[in-house]
Length: 225
Image 1 (cartoon, rainbow, N blue to C red):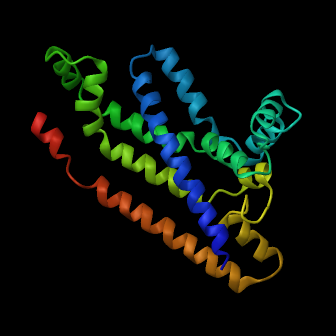
Image 2 (cartoon, rainbow, N blue to C red):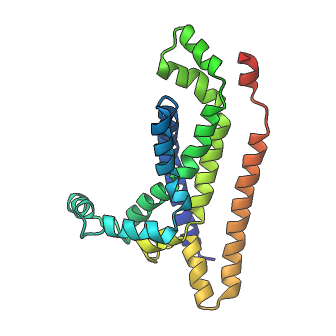
């Protein structure tokens, strides 16, 4: 069992989820108040990584973040860290690849909140941000929790984008999915099987946890209605 790869995957998944969830909340909240055309356009943009092949996204990230690009070169001159073949690079790739998993559940949770509750909060003197913190976020907690767990789990099993942008560098970019691939390539089936089983169990338990929370009644919604 390659524990270093497993720990690196956990770190990448946790950082990606912690960074994307606040962004997902802001994006979902902002989209509620845009025109129908603007809403549809940005939903298509934010959902694109969900249907885009990982190799296509990995290719553009490799080109766009490499030393040959202005962004990659500027970042390297400022930090002396390359955005490709590094943990920073696979972190950026994970952020972009997991946007749909972070914001779609939150958007659907916001959309499920009755409009009359939002109107009532304004009638009570709450501005938009106060209504968000005191009314909408507490009512949308299931969607936010689902987004966190789905983002974490999906990042944990990433392969194509991470391999293209980060390569296979031990303790830097070798995640658990890449370690499984390595063991398969060398015909170490038992080692690959043990790592695959751990990844399967972790993924199943997180999804089971999601179902448990999703089927709990929303007591706050009952109180306000």
